Image 1: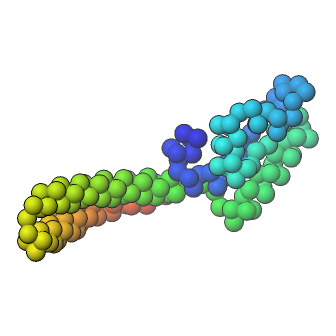
Image 2: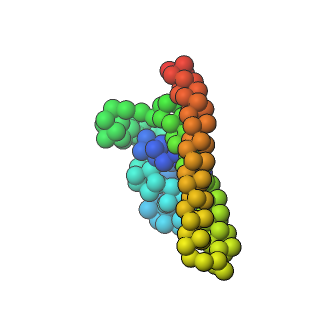
Image 3: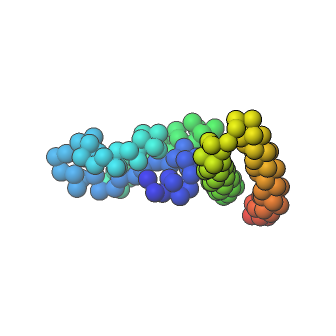
Length: 161
């Protein structure tokens, strides 16, 4: 599952698990094998339940190719690209930054509430309002500083294509 996390959830849409040496299972079926390994079963579910089992025999290779063709058809003829990966990385970074900002903002608001509990409600509300306005300005400033970085990454993506 670390593979999917590394390449983002979008990669799972373009992934099929391939098992070779199926004869090594002896008397176990593939389903029995998968039911014994919870992590592997979860990984296959993340890959939309797509897997193929074979012993590298010629007739089994054609079955694999049919499964791959079916997966590509379901994906509208598209495949996973570097551009998709870069977009997911940018989106992940953006989400991480926004979550961090939200946590900081919540901590600051909580700290302000604790400090203001003893003061008159009107004064407390005014300070809270000012703090929130200040936080909003700071958030906007941070977003403005992120834009050139995002543009630079987009330009890098374009040059990779």
